[in-house]
Amino acid sequence: MIALRAGSATDVGQVRSNNQDRLLEANPVFAVADGMGGAAAGEVASATAIEALQAWFAAIDAPTPDDLIRGAEKANRAVWDRAEANSEMRGMGTTLVALALVEAEKVAIANVGDSRLYAMHQGELRQVTEDHNLVAELVAEGRLSAEEAEFHPRRNIMTRALGVDPVVPVDLFLEDAEAGDRYLLCSDGLPREVKDDQIASILRRMSNPEEAAKELVDEANRKGGNDNITVVVVDVVDAEKDTVDATSVVPAVAPALETEERDESRASLRRPKLRGSKQESDDREPAPPKARLITLRVVAFVLVLLLLVAGGAVGVAWYARSGYFVGLRGQEITVFKGRPGGVLWWKPTVAQATITSTADIESRHVADLQAGVEEPSLGAANQFVTSLVIEKQQAETAALPPTTATTLPNPIAPATT
Ligand code: MG
Image 1 (cartoon, rainbow, N blue to C red):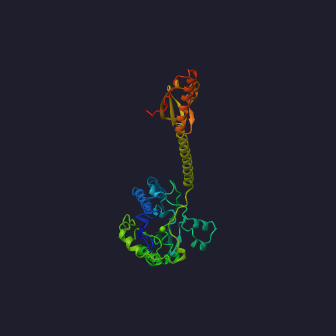
Image 2 (image 1 turned 90 degrees about the vertical axis):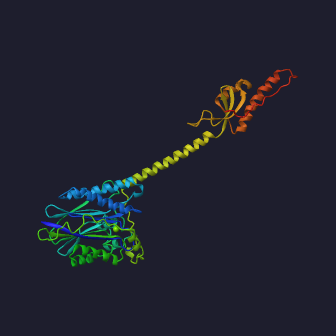
Image 3 (image 1 turned 60 degrees about the vertical axis):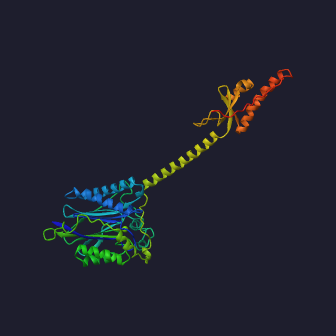
């Protein structure tokens, strides 16, 4: 029978102001998550993933490889849901590398992102997981050499992460575990600074997993500490011979909490980055998933459409409300603002009531007034009404004896409505 015992360490590093890494020690399950996202989102993403994973395994006595995949999927969903629920968290994500002791003397390893798991067997170190980032994939495809990859400007582009899609493919690895084997889970802050042979050297030299973990973090800080550094060292021991209770040496969970105090003290230690390969910022962005790109396009299209519709509506409203016409309210001749009959839901309004009725004008104009006679301004509309009244008066005057005096009423009176 084999058992696991572990030690861990995490540190904000020399440059960053907060630690977005989280780790889980819940023997026989161990994990490292490295969050990304603006402001506090990276920390939320990694913490959410680790909490979901822990909650999932809390109810499982003897985990199987399938449980590990399910746990990673649960963690993915938890981060995704949280990002969906909070617009400030949109786009956040996290890596997750997790190891669990499963039946038949094996460990299962689940991985999404560019945190890593290394296995050390008989003193030989081997990277088990594959990094899900653009450069690593180009190397795997033979399109980039390992040397080119080390200085590649797009080293930080991740191709897979938890929380950026509702579902995520999870890599699973199964390893035969025997007493004396050692596993290393780490965020990218370690291999960025410390070469694999140096990592192997430290792991060979320091038998206590806690001390080994601390030394690895210290070494990464000595080499620059450009990123958060998180390390979990897991030893495979013979359960019968091992005198240390595997569950008693580690706390169930050791979230990588950083206090404000610590952030401030770290801030004073910040120093310029000196080495070319470390110059790039680590504000990693997951490659935008296709589904989200399509969603963005649809949203952009709908927005443009809405703008066009809104612009059109403003134009129509302007047209509908500009101009005047002379029409009828019952028998009363009235000046309206707007268009005869209205435009869509913009109905004409009374601009000027008059004391003139259809009896004051020639009857041949009534049909025109019923339809509405458009005029460019209120003044022009009033003049038109006056001209109709004068026309009728003149016709009547012509029909009367020349000595009869004629008084013209003022056809225009202030609006009464
Ligand atoms: Mg990192």
